[in-house]
Amino acid sequence: ELFSHYRLHYGLVAAIALAAAIAIRRWRMAGVAALLVVANATFAVPSMLADPPAVPESGPRLRALFVNIQYGNEDYAALRGLVQELQPDVLAISEVSEAWIEALSDLLVDYPHRVVRPRADSFGIALWSRVPLDRARVTYPTKEGTPVVEADVRVGDQRLRLYFLHVVPPINERWAERRNDLLMEVARSAAEVDTPIVVCGDFNLTPWSPWFDEVLHVGRLTDARLGFGLQPSWPSVLGPLGIPIDHCAVRGVTPVDLRIERAVGSDHRPLFVEVVLGAASLTSP
Picture (spheres, rainbow, N blue to C red):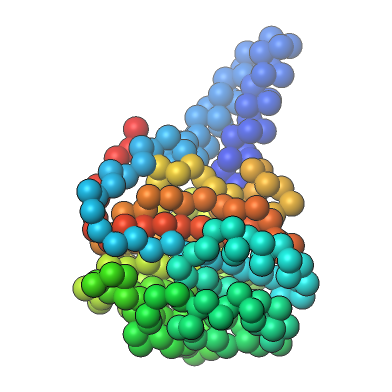
């Protein structure tokens, strides 16, 4: 499954091999390389070429910034600057520590509604909101005890269910199972909710993983990235050559903006999302 995450890279390498094979007139090699380009483009290209969703004529909007800040990162000024620039309605941070909460304390005065669980490891999690929250809480859906923020956000006169999560990285078979178990538990919970849904965070997998499609199917969700390009988020040092493992999946809302923001000292780049409550169909090429 880990090898499924590098479709774009395989395609780029195959394209280089194709050009080289043509240059030296190795036609059989060129044919194989061309097949590899097409095979990998089949996975990578649709999300890059899909049309943006049609925006409802009216409806309340929510702007949210989701950040895996990386435990031990001390570039407080970078994130402070980004929050001041974007002015999100909701700010959610994973791998959050007491030091980060202190560093952002003056900014967070404008976010009176919150659920905060800092930890001295990579699984602290917190959400701050300018708009009211109902049932804001940290849950532990699996026996492994990885936290998930679950909150009903009041957007205008409507409510939206928001899940924010950071799953464990699939560094071995056991941790891969933990990742999948948590994603599926959140998906099952989302499937039972009748209000609009936003599920965001560090999924530690790409859209090309079979587990990603399974999460969308079980949760009755749509990938909010469609129409906005690949938006690679990790590792931040690779910029556009990274892979998309920070995601937003939705139901009952229409994404009007989704983008990976500039690096803030973390190995992940932040994910900014703006949605309008009200569904719209997504079209693909």
